[in-house]
Length: 301
Image 1: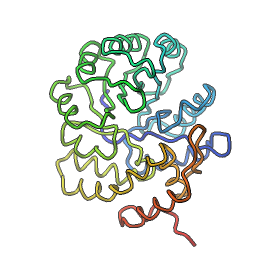
Image 2 (image 1 turned 90 degrees about the horizontal axis):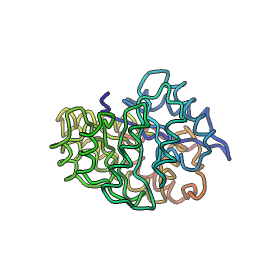
Image 3 (image 1 turned 60 degrees about the vertical axis):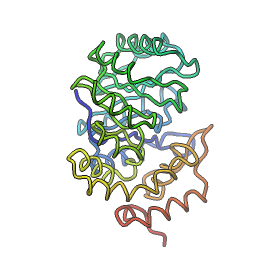
């Protein structure tokens, strides 16, 4: 399996304290109709770490049912800080209907590169599905170096991709030069997706594509086809929106936009808090300034 194109790191909608499954179904249709090539459920943007195991299972089941085979669905399985606990979770988990697993590096303990390598090999032994290495050092506190990613890609064919979210375009160049042909490099920073694709990435797992799947998918497709003027046109439309989405934490920003589009509420779970009214106003202003984006918003009466 080769993952490429536009992946969407799907939010988990809430209404009050509960998961809003009706909104989740609407959101699945919205991103698929907008051109998403695959969906990532229960990633960082999906607030998986704030949900119970029963809620996570219900979110996956609802997502798979609504997708109904239209695109591949990837599930996030976070590395935590205990390799054996994660391995047990893999062995006990029902992966039926899922295409791949995305797993971040262990957090808090800050293992060295050999520790990361051995951790991921243990995960691969337990996983019945292909694996995406999720490198996001700003969250985990540890950076999976390109050399370690390449060692893993060569050591076990279950490693099919890396979601690279360290904010480095040069490391994408290194990975693209040395990775096996079957191995996908996926941008994990929306703002850097265009230069990352130009440097060898074959797609992205996106936050902004929850709200604007068409714009992001068109940018990715144009970049992959070498149509740089077209890619820049779509990228420029989203440029001022990107930083606002993370100003008060992810997914607070993107959920505020989805609320303005009538797709779900902006509710997040503690320790996150919902986007402030001031941020909501600035997001609306930035989006309304872009003709390629503004039609998606509900216009005020």
